Length: 228
Image 1 (cartoon, rainbow, N blue to C red):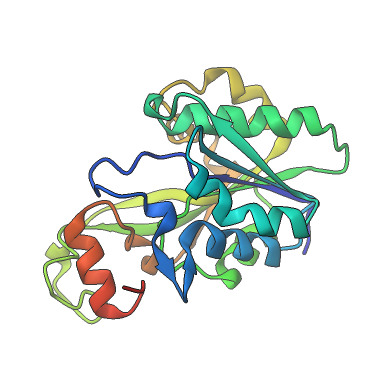
Image 2 (image 1 turned 90 degrees about the vertical axis):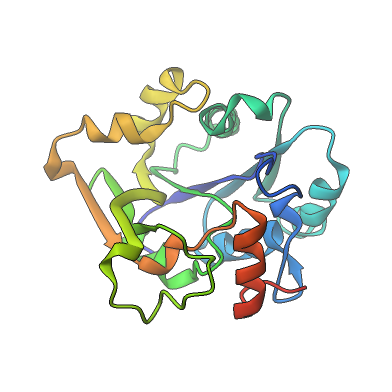
């Protein structure tokens, strides 16, 4: 690993469209939030901040054992998860600042519902030298309609390209941006304001597959990406 980094895992979403906590969906027999935390651990970070909703003991307990086993894992509770992802990121940054580890120079930011994310992609993000190294993928139009979009040549299946999570970002810059993170006004508009030379992306179209709706969950289970 080329950087001394920490990880912020944004896992305080309320999954309102899905109708159940996506943090607790099972992949390889364990809750998705725990699975993603293990991926973060594999990158050998200095610290991991997992932002979870307040007053949800099931989500907290899903990572309690790991947090007990690894002192670098810290759970950060978001008392107002309905305010959006940007506030969760704000709280994650705040927790890192309070940790006061001068060795940390980059932050890896991840969600928990990109079900085909793997360790090698995270390592490639951290290996980049730009201020921001983001993930590049396409937004699938209707990936849960039963069509195998991994093999399709129908470009109509894809929307515009996305530069997004997970991403690696310079820690000092992230701290400068912290106060600007409110509600759902996240990093994307701030990143767009950077000179192009400071941004790079690592393409991985498997990251297009996330779980936001019951239909997407059904399809993901059919593919074996998540367990029953």
